Length: 321
Image (cartoon, rainbow, N blue to C red; front, side):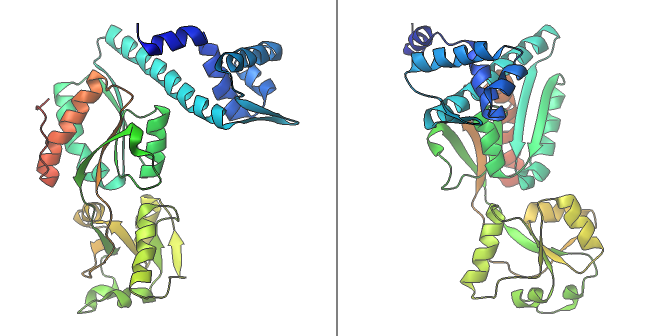
């Protein structure tokens, strides 16, 4: 019997205790948390006290108008969410197997590989496994990593930065992500020859919001070349708004080259012929070290690596699914 099993037996953990601490984290109040779980408040208080007694730590501070997780509580909440998500996924896989399906995979990706890597991969997987359920989430790396930690993602394609605790994550580099400047077809800047970066500063820019990796690199570019920071700008993470806005104005924007090529191929935007010294870190496959991959996730990851050879010229030592 493993040490992990011994710990579970000693702790006498109950699923309702895990549900309770997650509900407390979300509601901030034991009365509301007990209502969510359809139990009485005294029963909820006893469940929490029993868990704290077994663990030997206080998980929540009792405040005059609610409850707040302690550092110990934050740790337990994170693992409780992961455990509950894992149990939910186990149920989903069992139900899928009973219905003759292969399983389910929750995949996250940043936009550029979401546009060029995912379509051929999903086609490849669905051809071989038509009953495999695949849910795709497109978002920033920070959001996706949080979802990976919570257990709502099985696999993601994104990048790691210094702010991430990489000890619990497995990372395999796929490719770099060059960026470029874009504008609508017929924009006056396409008549400027040669075009240089300072020519673009007379126009309003649509830029990613503060906190995103691309925005950070964009701002660093201005500092490095001693350029005055842009004040005439619009901030958004919505590509739908960005393309619509640019089609009816002379605004310019920064965009990953793979995404820009997609819009250029469809005649919506064009890449401006100017060097944009704004380098992004490589992105790659990211999974959790402490969570074994399901057979369905293994199939999807293998297919992604096969497609990466065609799309990016990146060779992985994996069998073809």
